Length: 406
Image (cartoon, rainbow, N blue to C red; front, side, top):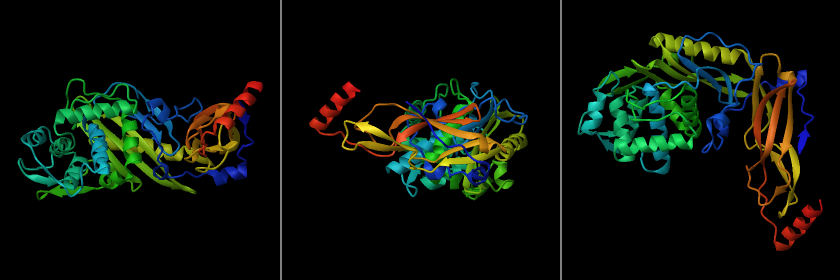
C-alpha cells in the first residue's frame, strides 16, 4: 500500500525547516547495518564537489545519513593508522561492558614496546611498566602510539591475535565487505586493507555508539613520560568546528585523514565526516579535508521533515491487542538538499500491509520515500512507534477470519 503525504515544504516553511537534529543525540541502532544501508548514495542532482587531490575520498552527512560526494570510495586501500578507529571501538566497547575501566593499569609487554619502536608513532611507554587505560587511550588517539595501541589490544583480547579476530568479527557485524585487519595499529601487513567508504562507516559507528570518545579525538596534545606530542590532525588547530578524528600514514597508504565537523544551523548541529586517503603530505591531507568539509556545509540546505517519534500516519494492526499503531521514525527525519531547493521536498509512504501483531516499537513496517521535485532523493525505513502485543486466541482467530474475507 502506498500513501502519498500532503507534505510539500512551502517556501516560507522551508526557511523554518533549515535545521538539523544533532546526529549524536539520536544514535540509531546500526548493529546489523550493511554499508549501503548506513548512508544513502548521492543522486545525479547533487551539486558538483570540488576537485580533491587524493587517491580516494568520501564525504558523509552523519545527521541525515547521506553520502554527499565520493571518488574511488570502494577502491581497496591500506588504512594505516586509521585502523586505530576500530581498535578504539572495541576498547570503548570493553569500557562500556565493564571489562576495562579508565583507572585500571595494564601491563606493557615487550611486544607492545617493540611495536612502538617501529615507525615514528609511539607514546614512549616503558616495557614491563603498568599504564592507566585512560593514558593508553590518549596515547593511541592523540599521539597515534603503536605501543599504546598494542597494550590496549592485549588488555582487551588477552593477545594481539585474539584482538585482531575481534576486529574482523566487528567488521562483519558492521556489514563491511572489503575491510580485513592483520594488526590493531595499522602497520603495513599482507591482507590489511579497507576502503574509504568502509572507513567512514567505522568512524561513524565509533562517534555515534560512543560519543564519549570525541573529547579524546579533540585533544590537541598529550604529555606522557615527560614527552609532549601534538595531535597530527592539523584541522583541530585551524577550524573550531572540527572535533576529530584520526590521521594515518604509511609509504603505501600515503597521508590520510578522517575528519569530522559539527556546525550549527538555525535548529541544531549538523555533523559531516570526511575520509581522505592517499594525499602527498600532512598539509595536503588537512587542506583537502577542509575543502570537502567547507563545501559540504555551504552547498546544501538541511531540512528537518519530522521529529523523532512524531506520528506520520496510523495504520490498522491485525491480531493485536490494539487495533492500530502510530507510524513514523524513532529518530528525526532529516535530509540535505542543494542550496535553495528545500521547497521542492516531498514525502510519501509505502506500508507493508497487512501489519500483523506482535509489533515491536521501532520495527520496520514500510518505507518513507523522499523526493526533490520529481527526483527520488532518499528512502528511509518507516517504523512502528507503538508496541502492539498479540491478542488472545479468540482475537487472533476473529482477525484471521476477517483477513480471509478481505
